[in-house]
Image (cartoon, rainbow, N blue to C red; front, side, top):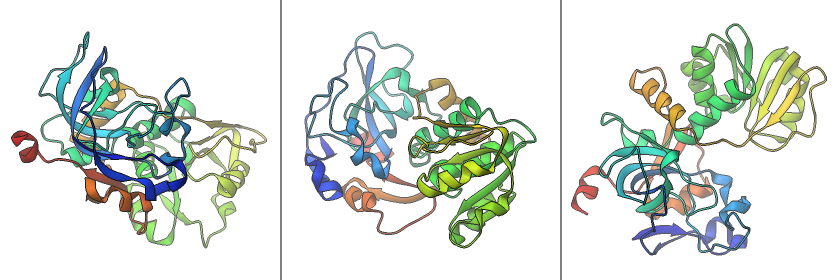
Length: 312
């Protein structure tokens, strides 16, 4: 089968190549997924788990990508809850070969059923962004109706979902980003928007929750905005500065089948819209990682379509 692999950590994006690799093995409680669409995180080539297994041993050549939508092709021993031929979407394990391949092995518990009326390209944009937004806002920051939340990167994959979820729960939402992100953020439901390149962050005033995907100086300055008892949640890096009267939390998204299913239902009902930016074929993955052109939303790799999969 074909897959995107990387062998040389120092080569960065330039080390991504489309190669022929062995068909994956389905371990106990695994499924093999015929991948139709896959998502990736641009910075994942810097993650230790991209290069080593859970025991710290080298596992190159490795297949990156951790979001997928596709069809179950095979069940491992003891696997329950899914069937061959079923449409699914979800996350691959951080320390195993990922989704940028025609087939990949995934723990069944990391996948949720996908309705026939949801396009694979859209579904592949939802797992990391949707779960990260939900867990950050509600599991870690405990956002509730009537509170104010500042969402950095409001037109990005994660931020755009956070804006929609926060607005739906009845929070006041302030989005941030670049000037050309304004219309996107406001269109998703943000009550106001701040241009990080031109506006003074302090004009936001006090907020109950800061949802950060940027880190660095933006994260440090945002801690000054948190009201008493408020929370900064970030996925960028462990915060070096704590709010004087609140708390700061760094977290890594965790798989959650039930929440994935809930997010998919919101999508079907028109209550949630993942932003899909570029859609590229598997052969153009390296160019997609390079981010030579910035677009709102999440870049998705189309690995196969329904007709192609039916013929294979």
